[in-house]
Amino acid sequence: MRAAKSLKILEQHLTAEEWLALGRPTVADLSVFVYVALAPMGDISLEPYPKVREWIERIKGLRGFFGIEGLDDPMVLRR
Image (cartoon, one colour):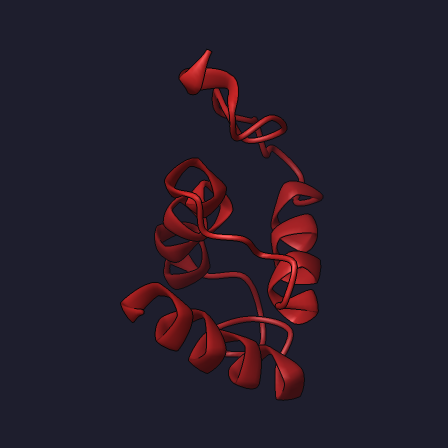
């Protein structure tokens, strides 16, 4: 329930803004990104949150970005 509430707030913010603060990528985006992007590992679907998914892709597209285990396949650690 907390995750759904938090994701709804994030979705609403990202409907009006591309980034979490200052109109550009900041440490705020990177700090929140890991928890949100890996939410499916905790059986939390991001499907209802299109703006959140777009934000995740924007972060993944940043120059110098490198992935982490489970990012492209959130179920990887469950195998």
